Length: 332
Image (cartoon, helix red, strand yellow):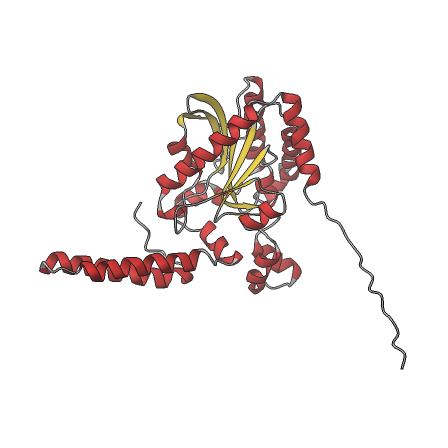
């Protein structure tokens, strides 16, 4: 996929080199010149620069990549990884939430249920999708689909990509906290394999509402956190300008999540991020889902529930140790 003109600040040195490379290739073709050595030198420099940039990203830079406007969204992956996706609508109580989508599909020939959060590409679509922030009816629709999957013994795949559940007046009136809480309880007791993949932003109860799963897989440049860093900075420092500091403190990148035992696997992205190559990113995710699904489908319902219970009981455990230093009085 051709990269967007949208460039993050830390990517500018790389984009400048890519422009130089394009210019050399155009000059070579237009003037019939042999510039192969110059082109090769620039290509090597681009490769070195890529490695320098993307191997030393800060937590804030990873968040910027997770929010990249050309990053693949849920439907991009659904249409590439799965076949015969049939979207289901409505929670049978209030209405249909377009920020949270779901339905039946096939994964490598086997029936599965998909639940996902969907953002929009432009202003019109973002308004339609509520900027990927689900409403209470979205979570109740998700629960309806989870129960349907359990009834027909279908594994469930959730794709997480949201800043938070929507916290407007209508959402509160229809009990968004209660809807998420019910989902947390019911997900912990589901008798079918359940895998979640954090494909972009995974934040707050909005993410957790479809995220109590047997496996949590996180893309290399995605993040999973109790809240966005801007919200954390506003709460702790009363200043959103502290967002960079908050991002580092929250331990929200994929490496930290695996280290803390929250995520089960980091899914490596194509060099430069998933937005650089949608197809390659989808292929890598497909492989990871297939591997974990194969492991989970060999387990009984009772074992799935017990392991899921133990997994979430262990998250957040910590130990305190106190060391005493013996001091000896020196005699004069």
